[in-house]
Length: 251
Image (cartoon, rainbow, N blue to C red; front, side, top):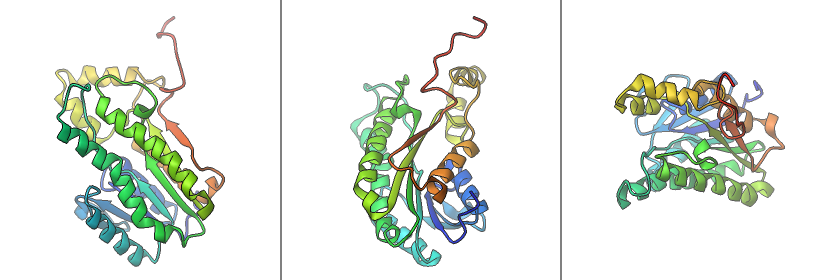
């Protein structure tokens, strides 16, 4: 995947977690990379940081246009920015439901439509949306988050159909539980963080959380010319959570 020389990439939520791992890998594969984030101050070189809140259309358009200008175009957009939510349909007020959809779904809409004029000028245009295992598997205490990620997977398919004849590929990755700062904060809030981490590890057939670098590798593959015939796909990076049904250990 070192064939990204001459390609320009934009990653939202790229200052930490999956986004930062993806931005680093894109840069290691010789792409020029711009990062959009609420706080891009800590984004290290050679990555270029731009401040943007994906729930603010004006900020997104300004940041995307600035990045495209500085990079002399855009070939790859990785829609990674997102927020989580815990609880059933009884939990969280309507404001929280609107907020999560505004970031997790509309944030992808805002960023992609701002980037489309630049992507149409590329010979290797690709959009990769960071979805979740929550889009395809029923997880407890994740009603709002799951609903937003289910919408994002459907949106990915619709976008792929809309733009395939423009030469723009659109795919998504569906990570399992990833060892990110957000998951770490959730674990810290648990009554027994060590027991909660052990439970998260145990529900994944591989017996451990997915790493941000593993998700980044899948994203970069889908974004690269190596995946030129892949569009409208959802690539699971979930340790087997979605497809495998194992007997309890020892049986």
